[in-house]
Image 1 (cartoon, one colour):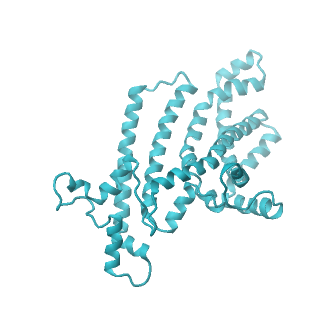
Image 2 (spheres, one colour):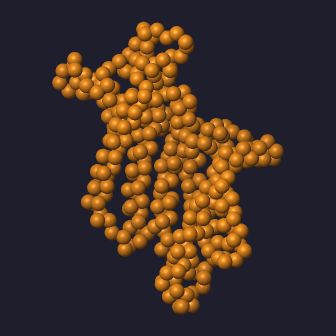
Image 3 (tube, helix red, strand yellow):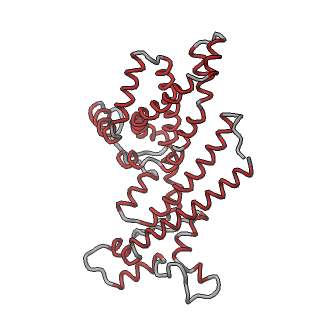
Length: 327
């Protein structure tokens, strides 16, 4: 197992290097440092002196890949690719391209806690609610409850998350005035700002997840071990919860594990609409402000979290099914 994990992590490092270099080349091919300077300075008439000053303040006046005028190792380290791309592997995100040049690493640490307050309860509730709803439909399979439950899943799956947000804000914030329409507060006061986006996000994901889990449970229902369990006189509820659910854990782990990066990175749409200062809103602000340093850093962080999440999924397989061997 250890050799397998080391090999997977080695593959992950290669993927991360490829993603990082591709992102760097893409950004600096589409937008040269001069273009980035013009975008951030703004105005119709931008002089070359202003561009050179902006580039010097942020280190974009250095060569891209190779500093021929430097000596020794400085030929490589005194370059933009080293300072803006290679440094990311040490989690040194540098400063943003904006006028105030904020510390990206500090912002990530600060905002990650806010994103976790929203995404972690949502992740737990989503797994529990989707699994329970799917088991309920399977328990009453071939009945009206199952039929209308599937119809409800398809209906919920077909509705955009923006519809849930707009209707939820109007109904619960403007009409019933149960929760604030947007904003955020630290401490226990954050609950009243987070409860609505958590519920709405759960509803927007419940239909697709429950329908997927239902299909997996129905596949397990027809296997030999289920017929054997029924032949022993076990009730349908015991068969579902003790046997079917246990043997369907691997696809559930796969589905739930792919959501783990969003637990740390936050939700772009919900954080933006509800004014929650998490990492999702951080990315939206960077894109709207054309702050490419932040976007590159978040792409790197997202790729890193995806690689780690799939390694954790492989480890979780061995916990869910002792027959799985990582070799």
